[in-house]
Length: 72
Image (cartoon, rainbow, N blue to C red; front, side, top):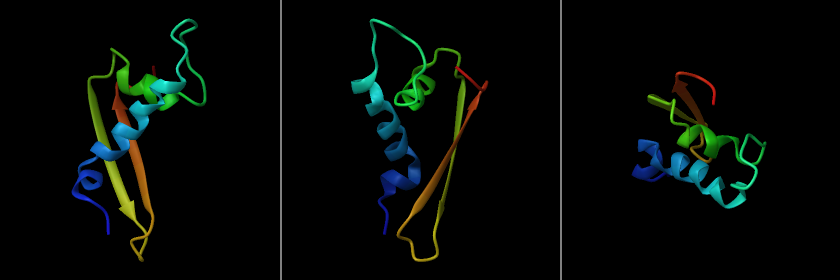
């Protein structure tokens, strides 16, 4: 079973933010290892919607995030 934190979306958001440890502040920009982080902190992001779906055995969760406006 999954925690309430996961159901609220804070768990995936915290995970995406943790990509900060790979971000190169000396050469800012997008990279495949920090794309979630840059989207989470992008100053243009005004809204975030998160959807979570579970497999029938509840062992795997799929998380989708929609940012408004899109992009970063």
